[in-house]
Length: 202
Image 1: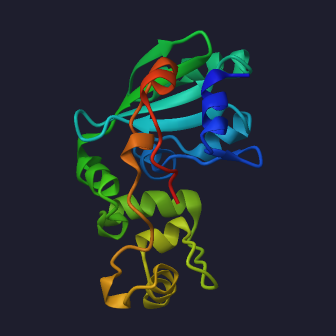
Image 2: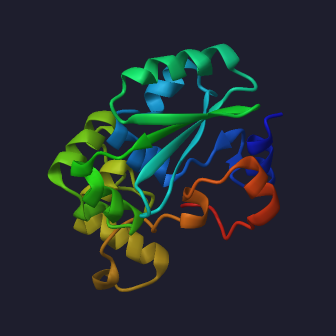
C-alpha cells in the first residue's frame, strides 16, 4: 500500500476507506484552478491530498498516488504544464507531488482561510467556490457545507453554538480553524519520523 495512505489510515485520517481531506484540498486548491472533483473524475483514488506551506511562500502541494495509478498521475502531470500557477514537481517513488504558486490576487483569501476566517474572504473567492461546491445549506445539524462556511446564517450559528454549548454571540465562523500540523506539507519520511498528529479537521 502507498506509504502516505498507510500513515493516514493508522493515524485516523481515513475512515471507512474515505480520506479526511485537508482544508487545503477543499478551500485552497481552487485558487490555483484545480478542484477535487476534476481529479476524482480522472480516478476517484488518484488524489491523496493537497497541502500548503503556511504563510511562508503561499505554495500548494497536490499529492497524487503514483504507486497505484502511474499512467493517470503522469498524464495529469503533463497537462499541468498548461496551468499558469504550476511551478514545479517532485517525482517520488510512490507519488507525484505537484507544486503551485497561489496567485497574488488570492493571497489575502489564502491567509484568511488558514486563520479559519472563511466568511471574511472576498466575494470573488466565494464565487469560485460556489461554482465548484454549489449553494446548498445544511439546516438540520451543525455540520456545515462549504456554502455554510462562506455564508453562515443565524440558524447555522445557532446550531453550531448548541453543538459547542456556548452562547451564539461567541460564534463568528461555523467551522473550526484548519489544523496547520495536518495542512502543511510533509514528505512521507517526515511524517513517519517527526510528526505526531494533534487531531484531524472537523
